[in-house]
Structure formats: C-alpha cells, structure tokens
Length: 297
Image (tube, rainbow, N blue to C red; front, side):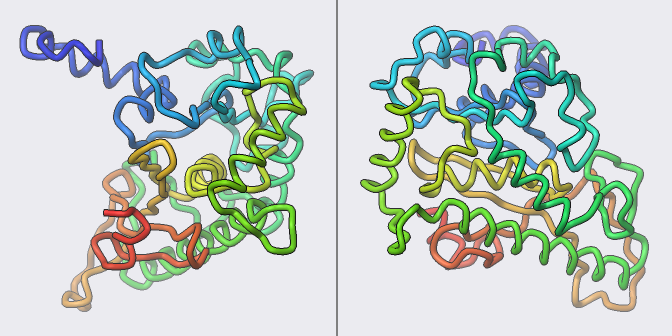
C-alpha cells in the first residue's frame, strides 16, 4: 500500500488507511517514513533493522531466518518470556495488551530474556518516580490537559529538560563500550554486534544486550525508555547508521510574559534535538547549528 503511489490519487481513504496501519505498527512507520512522532508510542515487540532493506520484513519472517551472518535486528522486549504482563516493570501501565494484533509476530519464547532493558526501566523509576502520580507529569495523549499559567509552564519545562538530559546521559553511559577507552567508533560497534550475534547464534538482538552503540542504537534505546518514562520524544532516522531523538518542551513566548497562555499537551511539537553522541545530555534547539551537526544536515 505504501509503495503504490498511484492509488493515493484514486482512493480517497488510502492515506487514512495507511496512517491507521502505521499507528498500530510503529516499526513499519519508522522503516517507511523514517520518523516516529511524539505521539507514536513504541510497544513490546518494536523492532528495527540495522540496515534498511526493501521490502519491509515482519518480525516473524526475520525470526524464521535468524542467521548470525545477516545484518542485526534490534528488538525491544521488556516482557519476561514466562510473564503475561509487563506492567510490573513498566513506569506506566500500558494502554495496550502485550499480545495485541500488531505484536502477534513477537514470540517471546524465541527471544532471550532481556533483563538489561527491564533494569534500565527500574533505574528510571528510582530517578523519575511514577509519572502518573507526579505533579510535574505531562500526559501527551490527553488533549484536554492544559498548562494554564506561565509559572506552571516554566516548572513543567524545567522538569522535562532535566529528565531528558538525565536520560540522555544514562543512555550514553550504558552504551559507551566495554573497555576503558570507551571506543564507540563504527568499526567497534560492528565488531561488538558481530560478537553478540555469534554468541546468540542469531541476528535478532535484544536492545538491552547492546553495550557499545552508535547513533542508531542510542537513539532507539532513548526512544523506548522515554516512551515509558512519560517524556514526549520523537525518533528520526535518515539512513542505516544516522538517527537522532527530539523532545517536546512547552515554552512560553518571552515577548508575551504578561499574557496568560494555554498549552494543550496534544498540540506539542518537538523543539529540541537530544545529543546522545558528542556531548550527551545537551538539548539543542531545532534549526540551530549544533542541532544540524547532530542530524548531519
């Protein structure tokens, strides 16, 4: 459907149908469009191929091959193989079932238990607390929630920036390599991934197994953790190795300091690029020189 460009001009419901499919399958949306917006939430079973290929393969098809000589496939799997619910380790009670239609191709029994990924979530719970019970929590999916006063907006903005920066530093820390040199150059990352695939005897790699990651691996980990920590995060991918994350922080117009403003959470747009590689923890305004360097624009 995505590649049939002629049908878009003939069938009126073509674009809405594709959008509905993408809402239930974020892996496909990222592969075809190169972007997941802040309202596109990843879920258990989200997967990304290291090397972009055509046509887009389902996870079930990739699991059937599972050849360690093939390009890596990163899988987000928070759910223990013998568990029916991930809410015990998730920062937020998921609004979807782990066995929903979009994730039926995921077979936990055929994937190794990704304990590291669950450990990352528990660390975030210690640092951030429960977002659903925090006064600073900003629910992106609730369009009726509004930050009504400028001081409240500043409070929320500061909290989101602090959490976004802390998460970026943590992601960089856990993916900075296994040696004292912390070498995360492209050859080192490829060698590390090859070692993992040979040990697992499969090219299907749980994201938590990766300890030496480049821009793509770090951006993927940041996105899946941010979605569960309540941070409004977008993921962009320009090519096989280049990816970055953006966060949305509500900020008032400094020229209208005396005007009361409303900020519907559902209308937030990403306005900062997160630095995960050069100086992890920096939040760079979109369109700035430093942000363009991160995005290689």
